[in-house]
Image (tube, rainbow over the protein chains, first blue to last red):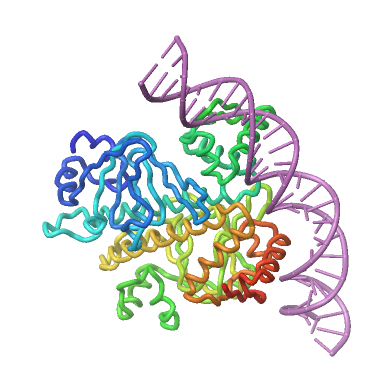
Length: 219
Length: 219
DNA sequence: GAATTTCTGTTGAATTTTCAACAAAAGGAG
DNA sequence: CTCCTTTTGTTGAAAATTCAACAGAAATTC
């Protein structure tokens, strides 16, 4: 497990827990690591919400398909992020979304119960992890509010610009790359792909943005 | 404070904490109660995110106004619900939304720090409240996902039907009333009010729903 | 209870988005 | 390197949403 420590240290679940304790903690939690190839489903819609995942390498997307078959991308996941914790922490029966690897990826999987309830060894980290989960969920709440800010906009242009500004802020630069291709960006913004392409072209002509494939710059 | 106990008992922050302890706990937390008239702002956008609110009576709405001046309603709040906890728990500088009383309302206000950090009396409830906050934030996460399900839909009709189905499920009946008038519902669904009215009329003619003002029934 | 204000539903015109189809460019496989 | 697949940008037609304006209904105020 040692080779994952660089990533795990960045995972909000292990804030304020130092490396020396991590090995023991992970075995106490029964953590295991699974690998998934590109396009493979890590957690599938409808499966029990018992597990928390930590993305160790690669990238993933949270996908929702409604009963009309429309695919929408809820969010993109990068290494050290927690996955599925909202559903398992809330005690939901099953998860209503799928989580799909976007490239070959490794995931650490932990049964949520083993985080929330003290173990027989009565190791002292559960309180800290519950606090960490609380903070992480609060941060995700804010991120979901931002996603709502995006999808709430009425026009393709406003959705796109709102998303680009959030992304620029998150990455701390007016130049940044996005984790989506055009179709995926459309599925994330909930707009028509061809209309989105047209809008990007217009904004480029207007001198509002520069862009090349997944690279964007706000001017 | 005793008169608020019926409501406070339902507040997720106080799960698994019994009435006997509540009086001491509230004074330990420095809880105070404020009253607001209809249309008055309880927390205003940009103010420090230090406080958690509990709606004791009345009702409220979380309002967001973007730089174009478009009002959108993020959610409706009813008694015993927590307000603003995501921002204060995440350690945000300020809150990006306003919370407005929708009728004369009473709010209990607690400084979030006093929940998260043990007090000098070292009373034993902080761990339980942190757990409760974690669970509450997880549940709210799921609710935000549902809100995204609504605003993600492309057409007014799909947004409306998705919202009505969620509301029917939440209220446990195909007959239910919504907490919004027409303009507010439009601001919640992020659609045009007149188009929304037209859509409601059509769905009624089609025999998909019955409705009268704020009363709806799914057929 | 009369007057005023707010709320709701309708309508037609203007604007946007979606849809469908295509061609060029880019990327991957063998 | 060539062939095949995927991705991207364009375009025009169809469909839907937004906008603006209005009239009747309902609620509120004095």
